Length: 288
Image (cartoon, rainbow, N blue to C red; front, top):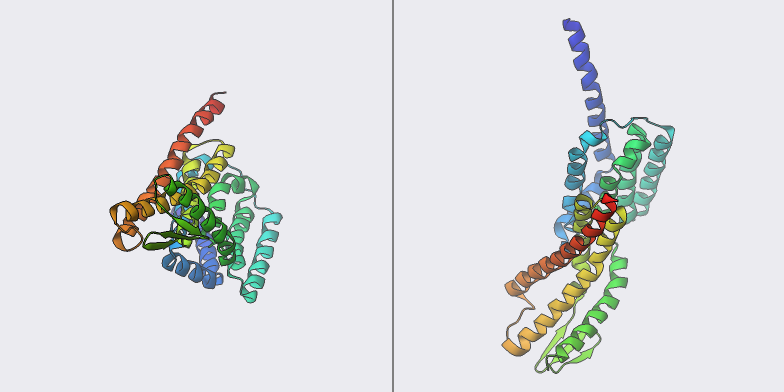
């Protein structure tokens, strides 16, 4: 009886030891990438949302574990082949010094390992929390450079048009706005890109938790783009009006920080309101 009990305990410990060993091996193999990602999340305001991604993904998997417990576990050769390919991809990208591709290979390897250990059915079930891991990867600086300038110009142009409606004399030269006795520059932070990735992350999580249609979830995520741009136009307009009419500077110091938080909360409010509209269609699809 005691021997049977010991065998049962050993059998239960074997999978735990296996998964623990795989996790440790994964951390050791990808330690340079993990260290670089954590450093970027901690020191970059544009990528600080990356700290939340893994805990949220694990939380979603844990919360839905009862729904996925009955899924067939069928490890396949396809997943094992993918593990080999993703590891080769990691080695090549790391040797080439391409940080974005090295980070991508980390996420792809996680996907491949899940497929190899548990099979296609489980992989499909946990696809969203696995896909969410892509948001851990910092956006390449080249993309930011290409996207920032057009957005800066657009925000500057629209803001100048709006403040003229309030009888504010302005002269715009590119992303520079001249006021009587003061010159403002619409910098990268006011283009909307800084808050965009955080908004995309929150919209993805919010949509998954509150909507059942994947199409509507996608629409909600896309809505974060115009929301980020609109609130940053609002930010620039309010900065100009506060300087011109109240001689109050919102462009630096504590007022700038507080105002930035308010603007981000406004963007969240816009997205939440739009989600309320989408939820009505979501309810109709569920009822039908």
